[in-house]
Length: 407
Image (cartoon, rainbow, N blue to C red):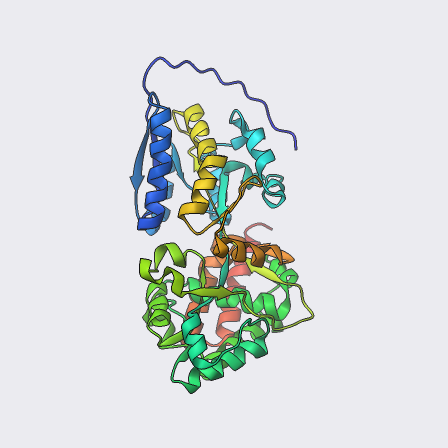
């Protein structure tokens, strides 16, 4: 890959402050970010970072305003996926090719992330970590129910569900008040029933949502609900409450990202949860996994472009990613990081490495105009507020409108 060469003109005559906004506000992730910034400020006293924490939803909703300011924040948390494309098109994000030393960073990345930089939008952020989705459970509850591990197939999962119900425990909690959990089930059922290639084509809008295979996915999900696989009404509780039902033994399992360990688990329960890969349903299709990528980017209109670029490289550095493997539950994007004795990271990495196709998540893999409609409708479906036909035709209408705008 050929990297554009841009010569920086840089004179350090006065103290420069780099503004950094992030949504890493849980105690675990906040501590990690504070350590990263403290290290930078100790070693770069003439260009310290001014760190601001804000809520994830607030940052997402305010991002447009931040980036269009005359003097925007210098560095921000990256929101992966298609929603960033309009910012790129309006030059509201710094092209990382202009950062001095970026080639060395590119070379340090694992092949998967190096390939990303062949695509235009990937050249606007520094990928620093990625995580996995899996089914989380309490081994002590499984032992109580007489469930044998490992669980690899759908039949084995069904047997486990029946054993849980035999002792009065609902197999799964969903907690889809904020949409993601129900959509995760859609992603995984689609990948496991129809295969990752079909899923990719769906995300790329090459397949209509009225395709019979989408009905198969929705009907499969509805059958699980009718068989009482999920506790309560889908939208009546959130992810954190879903995890709580697993911890208190009311539910046996929940499908969630590895961030559960940093965001929702009390310290005393860290060793109480384990996880396994979403089981195989159709053995005739390849394995796909959702594995969202996290990172950071610099504002295109920053007045401190070189300093912002240097700080981005610090965020992606070997030292920082090594620290991340010690403090948070995420996998490094660099190829030169030893994850040490973190068995959870090793297990999560194995899930990702065994997959034939990797995705990020529904709202990151398909245009936001479709994802927003799709997530709402899938959630309505999970809440018994829409049937298969309504979901399929309404998302398909959105797909056709979107495609019509570009034809």
